[in-house]
Image (cartoon, rainbow, N blue to C red; front, side, top):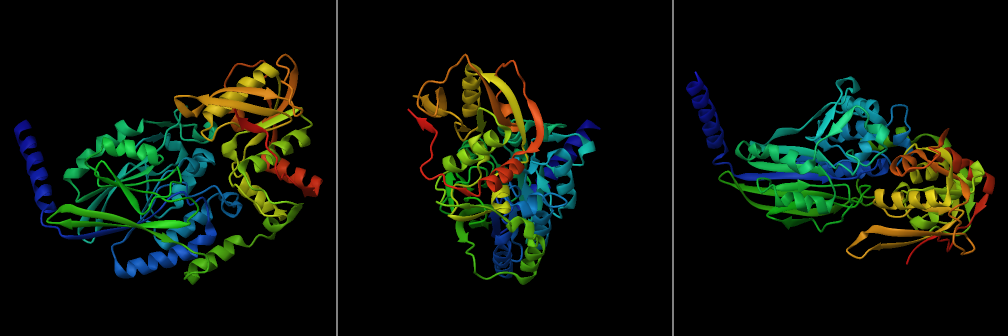
Length: 476
């Protein structure tokens, strides 16, 4: 019996290998990454997909994750992220990776999104409690005009063992290491003409992954918002990625001759505002966007914001002022855009700047505990030192690793060293409290108020704001 099973397996493998021989043609892929709910670009995206499908009927449309979090029209919709799912369904996405921001509404929210999607979410390194209803699969084999294309999905795993989102958002889920897990799917090389890794890892990790997956042909990547010139070859694998928010998409062409990949190339396509658009998709965007509350002006910006630091100072000031705290801090990665013109600052502007739904936390800390929290936040938030209010920060980096903060020193706004023995009332939020795990006597109290609500109140109370030249965090 064992000999019969072995023979059947060998015959099946031989038959599959024979089926792969002789295929000649092209596979065309249109890929996006880190769309971050830019609904307004979808009419142009749809028109681009329509045009390519006219030329290439078997076009595969893929997303490398982070489809949501960036536009309140999408993110605080009655069913969060439903507008993006509906639009992706309409334009005909074939598959999406899970990005770290797909977890921003927790397991139940992600479960609802995956159930509503007409396309699979691919992720080989997630294990989710069935009660959450998260529908994912590790891979899928597509038939692209007679050419078999195997696609494996993977999401990044941070230092805490979860994707980069609030830890509470991943309750009921565990994640396997990416590299070891992806390598389990090397068998796809013998079953498919083309193998694609659809990843949300970041460009540097994609390059490292390419070094140990010689059986793959293309990595369609996201997470680091790295703008590549079409694609880059690393270890024989073509890697593609663009900046975020659908400024550009990538058209990848993979050429086969006699069942083997003989060429692969990628080109960027800009989705310029005002270019050709799909009218049906435009009507959907208009319908989802019809909420005048988002356009309500909260205050007037007297001088334009020109940096993440200035906007981060404003957000941390909002926590300090509205709670009456002595000091405040937020993680720099929570500041989601870099500039804002002079003029009206609207509800929509606040929600786009701070889209994560964090809640305000208040605690009493000594200067020594505050210094350690600033250091923890600098190291555990990949964007660097936090944005602060009520004090200043000077930091140094490791001489062997410029991305690692080595030390921080705290100062008063007048430039004197902060008293490390004094107790300060600190306002921060739930994400910062979770990533600053150093021991402290006061674990903090959740005020059950979202940070964006406090920012809106702050701006309305101010009436006018001017943060020109404001900078409280400096590298030594």
